[in-house]
Length: 253
Ligand code: G
Ligand code: G
Ligand code: NA
Ligand code: MN
Image (cartoon, rainbow, N blue to C red; front, top):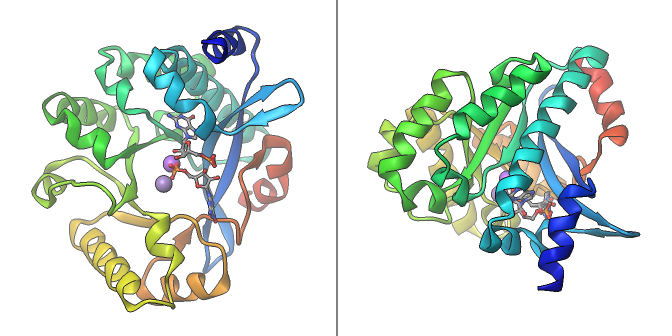
């Protein structure tokens, strides 16, 4: 309960911050987008989302937090567009609960409009569980988001229970290969079998594919050889504050 009221105040006091992790195209060694990851600057402690996102979801605080997140992402992308000619998107993690919001599309629209950035500047990462939980409501929502230019990426792909039949009908732009399959690449044949299958699936459905959690050259090389050229992970960069992202941003112009 104490944590709950502290988190409540954190939103009012502007203690939430976004860190950004570059998405890298390994052929060109260039950044082709970023993922925004929330942190809570609680005094001198930087609290990771694992310690408060669940609480935020359970208490409903995730709604004002995500409002802040969308606005902050739009503000940040505007700044990068102005200062660095940034033309890629910021991916934000969309909690499952937000699908229950009838005003999500309007919310995103008002955030990007407020800063005068194109809708395609915001990409949404959703999980398979979030997707499959409430398909009847999610399908029209995804179509409306896609119509206004907001791309959808399926996060942690391969860990949930998404039906392949649905994947063919949903307006999805990208599959993000889950870290657990990346971890054992080059060590166990099973991991490369799964990754090969995901890449083939993405190809045949015309979706982009990205791998997360790439920590070493072995994983990078196997992914590249299997046909996944865009990656994210500690090998390239940890999630970092906006001011530390500048060396990557200079490459985009
Ligand atoms: O950043 P990190 O290393 O600790 O993230 C841990 C988890 O928290 C990830 O699974 C990520 O999807 C989730 N997460 C990070 N930022 C956000 C956010 O802004 N909103 C939501 N809903 N989840 C987030
Ligand atoms: O749920 P989501 O996939 O959005 O969360 C991404 C999480 O993965 C964040 O907590 C982020 O800090 C973490 N992460 C990003 N790159 C790496 C990596 O190379 N290795 C590990 N172990 N975690 C990573
Ligand atoms: Na994510
Ligand atoms: Mn993930």
